[in-house]
Length: 232
Figure 1: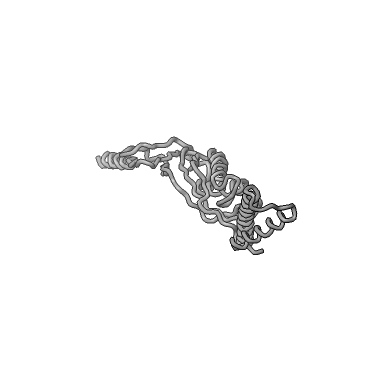
Figure 2: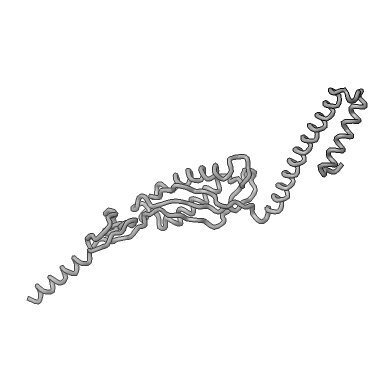
């Protein structure tokens, strides 16, 4: 009689031990004696064989913001890039059993992709961060698919030059801006001088030979440049 009671108690404990609670966005990866036995994605109360090893997997959409990672621009200058990665676990078996830590694997794939894709700082003329983000997304998605990860987006959120080259790049950018400003101002002055000389001659206000025309053009150019604050 006591043996029967004991057996019934053990069976009851065995049965209750298989009860589990499934949640939306979570999954159970089941394994028995080292072999994969399936994945449970249902929500609510469910029963699983107590002899089966259960490992929980998060299958919700996740965002990962990296720290500043080394990269290079199209000219080979050193950069520091912060990336935002949108991803999720798609194949739970591969993600949990294929690699030891799929989050670490994702980070390594992002670092490898940055070594192959040049990233252009803001204000560039070769597609900017959008083109680099598209290329990074394709590379990382291809590399992580075999381990059950689905990558939706890899986008740079901050791109800065490395400290060792930041000063030189800042001076180069200021010089380029100054050169463009001077070129724009010179074009404006030349147009103004040409328009003034043309009006004077067409209306018959002055009659100029080649030498006098050159002198007038020179004097007007000096006057316009001085009025615009340009050194003569």
